[in-house]
Image (tube, rainbow, N blue to C red; front, side, top):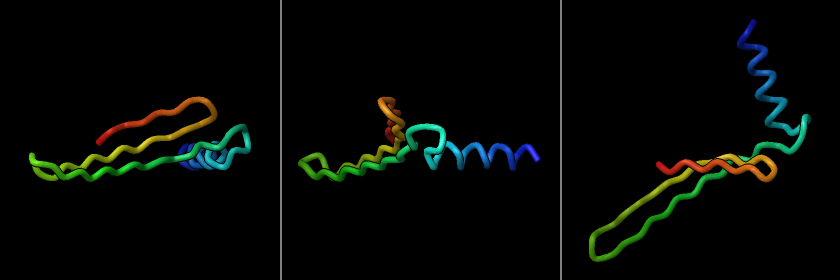
Length: 56
């Protein structure tokens, strides 16, 4: 029953019914140079003026 409540809360926050919706973001960079090929990926979420980004 607890899982259903948590799922309902996640859906409520994700759709924006209680305020600004949470928008996911994904950024991938591929670069090539004399040192070889490098890749980087970052994922994040943004809700109103608050943004959280995590590089992988």
